[in-house]
Image (cartoon, rainbow, N blue to C red; front, side, top):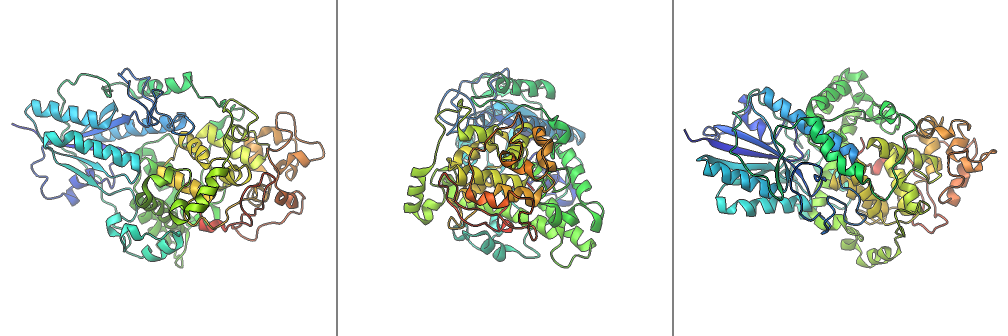
Length: 587
């Protein structure tokens, strides 16, 4: 009997629940036209454009995304595109999905190389074996490189005459359901939110299948350049092979030393996978009015601990949870806690809309999301050109005195910045509050090329997502959406507003433990000066900081406020920007 095989090509959708393809085979939502499908072949590729696969036992000679021979590195700075924390999280997520698929009668075929070459090889081998290919299905991505991958897949499969079908799934509100054409997307988030916010703005999540069509065994496919079958290798074996190139060559910037046992104090101690993500979902929403979710608005600006925010961002980035699954639970928690319209659940959905917004910005502006002049070039090309001339860049990433290098290695001498950058380097995570402050210092006080910061985040963040990461960096740097608004943060004021007792600072920077809570925020002006093991002077010092050095520095009157001023290095910006108007994807 001829097998009729559907190939499901997976990328950032490593789940069974509310999956654009698998959910169509759930008994309660079975789709017409799939009756003749006899087998489903789920395929995952460690794409060598984004993750260094040179340590695997495959053949990898192709050029990296920057056009060189040095692997999966960022375009401007040449950092590893996927650093150690995300490699670990991604690998765990892939193998967790394989286990979940096996539990419902299926499996996951794991490869490394170029997806279009691999899918072409698989299709040709199955056709030669006498099988019929029902189609190659995958979830759409809004980003330029991912779209280019989709085009290569379609081109490679054209001669096989196999139907290729894509599904929108990454956003809470699907692009086809927007109340306006994408070209009319507002360039200010608030305008976007007011136009889309409605009780029925998204569809209910779909169930996971209890059983999946059988997994088809593949004919032998020889490994070659860009095509390598990971096969039956164990998770730990593959993980070590993926990490080996990064360990041999960590890059020109020295690694940050772990003198705090980062694994034990990490705010994101999750290892990856849908299984763990679903447990987190239950933990965060359990308790109705007393749940962590119900109190999200009051706690979301924290920096220390596991439950001050949802920590769903990594699960969303890798597709371990769908935004609809989270939003549905958020709605329910507000109903059960009798919230009057804007409880914790509302603010969780509010953040999901910010995430949606940057997806649509990425769709609308394409490659401008990654260029030096940014989206601002579409609004005011002259202003964008002037800014492009002014950005600084390191003379060498090996120069430990360079301000960017000090920023990246948590050696700026500004405690709030260093604590957050150290947490990022050691754990792959940073709070929303931290992301805004470190981005502001780099772009508004030091005036360094914002793309360097975005690429450093790309390399290290476990929850890296192209549109949220680059969109947020442009926004803070003043070259993105609404470039007229000032977003310069005062890290001294911010530290005392959100970490007055310096618990976060002293947790990540033990050298500051001997200082008073007040002096820990600005050790260079303490009576004894900066302690041994910490920079004697900050990398810069804005006049606006000085008004917050005393014990009686202004305290916040709520959860908002930035505070700024021009730095001695001539950075742009003035007063503070209301925090409520912009958040990074660290929720």
